[in-house]
Length: 232
Image 1 (cartoon, rainbow, N blue to C red):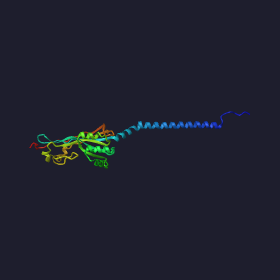
Image 2: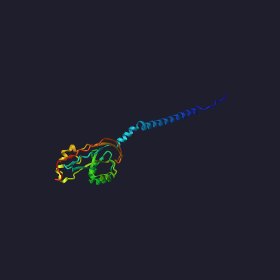
Image 3: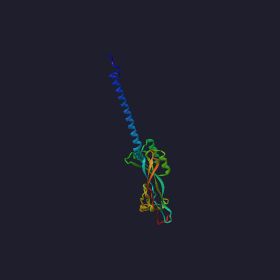
Image 4: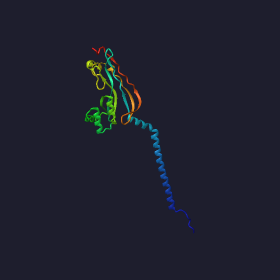
């Protein structure tokens, strides 16, 4: 009696296992590629706007547009109090990245004690004003340090051409440009302007790289004409 030739049962089982293993590996690879494809579609498509919004929120800031105070004049129109451009230096502690050498250099440019600058930067307030009413050239040297989290705020500084003769009448303003005495205080509501606002995008160094929108235009303060003659 002749034996029928063929593949042994053990061999057939091994072939089935190899095929099953091959199908499993192919299925896993296909599933992996499918997951990656869905993830890429989500990030680049549906989720792209969300990521862009979060990125813009990280570096988006609403900055004030300063409004100058009105001019105080005598009855002949001669200016007794004017506003000239000046800059304030401030820090946002959430964005701040500063080392010891940069802190010393910053204090030197601001003519402040490095220990005092360090103390103020470690405070609890998120926004810290380091120096107000700096000349433009000095403020630019501060920005040349390129310290992330250190920013400039443009504004105005009050000046009095006839300060010695009319100081008792005209008065003065404080660091926030608000009247404290004399005409500056009496006519505060009229002299003070209304600051505007704009939304910008900053880079990590604090430089404005894009103006997003003008939220509100500034309104300058009204002039005040006095009945006195500065020449007398």
